[in-house]
Amino acid sequence: MEEQTPSENTPQAAKAPESSPPENRAVLQSKLLAGALLAVVLVVGLYYVNRYWIAPAVRAQTKGDGAHPLAPAFSLTDITGKPLKLSDYQGKVVLLDFWATWCGPCRIEIPGFIELQKRYAAQGFTMIGISMDDSPEPVVDFYKQMQMNYPVAVGNDRLGELYGGMPGLPTTFVIGRDGRIYAKHEGAYDPSVFEAEIKVLLAASPADEVKDFHQAGRIFQDGKVELGDPATIDSEVPGINLTKLTADQKEAYKKILLSQQCPCGCKLSLLKCRQVDRRCSVSLKLAQDQMEAFLKVKSSGVATK
Image (tube, rainbow, N blue to C red):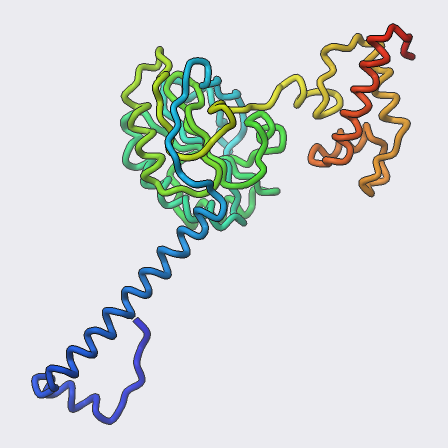
């Protein structure tokens, strides 16, 4: 509560509070109550602005057969120097949180994740944090400041693409004991949303898919988790699937990209821009157009050099 400025009447009121008229006390109590309620409304409002500004409106969805893909494997080193492999958590329920220290809604969620780790770790649950910060230094500082009790590693663009891309943070995946992704939440959510899903998956067998799983929160078109294609992500031309080309055709296609400059302002060739800046949408679109044209020539039977 904000400190009030002393007045000449304050000492007398302190000595003989019983002499204050009842109506004055009632007015004072009403003002204090109104102030407290206003403070609560402001705090709650700030939380929900962060939550719903980024997160879509909550609604329940049911996933059918084949809608729960296996979570892409990854192997990183966490910020304490220990190996962090998703495969080491097989048989556990995992909440995989993509976040960043500069992301306000991400920071709001962290205390709730710490509590979930405390509450359910002994039952076969673990949090894993993947920071999308550019360097580990701010992550280490934040980790210590918040006393985070679960493994955290700094991710990269490739890992983000494997999980379908990260157009916004936080993005959190709920993975069952069977290694399948059951839910994806974009934006900040109340811990109770995750807790409800965790309880359902903890009760399931590692050998069985939970086909009648219900998720709280809007997710994907047709209710399916869209993940990245490793053949496209790990391509020699990032973002372009080259598996349908022969070795000679692959080299011919790369020469086409090498001969053209990317107009994004980088002053690099299309090929080089794709290789050094996976996020460049300009070079990606042009590389896709060139691949489409290349395949048409290929299908027409015209020789490519």
